[in-house]
Amino acid sequence: MKNVILTGDRPTGNLHIGHYVGSISNRLKLQEKGGYDKFYIMIADTQALTDNADKVDKVKNNIIQVAIDYLSAGIDPEKVNIFIQSQVPELSEITMYFMNLVSVARLNRNPTIKEEIKQRGFSNSMPVGFMCYPISQAADILAFDANIIPVGEDQEPMLEQAREIARSFNSTYGEKVLVEPKSVLPETKNQARLVGLDGKLKMSKSAGNCIYLKDEPEVIKQKVMSAYTDPNHIKVSDPGQVKGNVVFEYLEAFATEESFKKYLPEYKNLDELKAHYKKGGLGDVKIKMFLNNVLQELLAPIRERRKELEKNVDKIYNMLFENGKKARQHAAKTLERMKNAMGIDYTKFLK
Ligand code: ATP
Ligand code: MG
Image 1 (cartoon, rainbow, N blue to C red):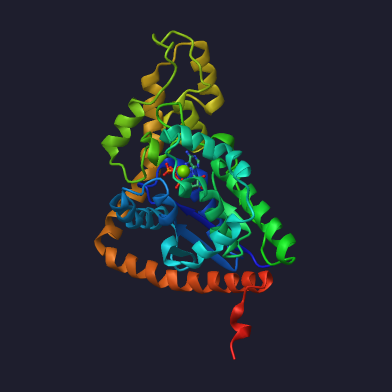
Image 2 (image 1 turned 180 degrees about the vertical axis):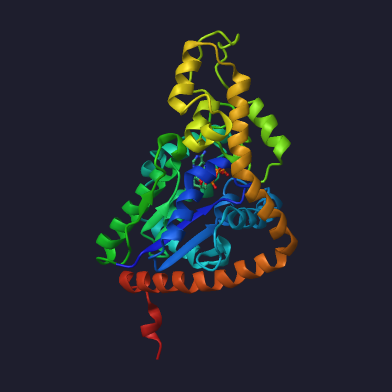
């Protein structure tokens, strides 16, 4: 079997550190490891419109922002095809055929969608397009015969849906037409679902609780200083909670033993730091300053590369358009294979 990697992001804002640990770091590992036949990263503008129909400018303008974020984070355009979803219209046709294989009850069982509906305040006003985006996302994956999907935890239900659709299509129309995809999740649970600065929801562009890859040093510091910790840890001497404490969640995701050696040598590792915090005698300012140092070190080179890339935006648009044509050829082949299997290739009637 061929190895095809596919993943993507919605152009609803700049990428944040949740994306970095949740998906980008695995993309970088896969890119370095090599050994794949194709590697696609899709900027999901069509999907972003499902809950932003009246905010076309936001979606449009963030396409280039997300592309620059990828490149500045280290995605290599020589190794990876980065393209825009709407430039592959075959995906919409594939979605239509898949819609017939999924029940409304099944869509309603998707836990990520349930959380997103709550977060967006949809009740009866939920757009049909939004409700169906897991089906269109299955089309995005299956159209490229992708079998390796590096994502965060919120995407697991989408992957399950995509696998079900592949199985249902294959059993209805012909075995082995579509490939079943597998997710590649980060190593730890908190990396797979990095919590937002508010300590409530997952970090997400739509919730506005993010540290962005492009944030300037003083913005990063100000956000770190405002992060939710333990509201009962008032005096330095008070014992503190590390569970649900955003600073510890982020240290868990980003701090290494090297970080301790460099910025907080009086502790060997996170376990020691946690133990002191729980016992009492360790103030929030100290742990926040440490986190600030760790994040500043991670984000400085990304921000510098971004500044260079921003000088040549035309070149990036050209790359996206050229890549879109190649992606389209791949999706068109899958669509043809699907239509053959379904028996709706009418060209045979032509004389
Ligand atoms: P939106 O609020 O518009 O949905 P988002 O911040 O949730 O934006 P997406 O574009 O939906 O970002 O997600 C892109 C990828 O990043 C997915 O693979 C998703 O699992 C991963 N991801 C998003 N947020 C996080 C997070 N907080 N922690 C880990 N991974 C994340
Ligand atoms: Mg999301």
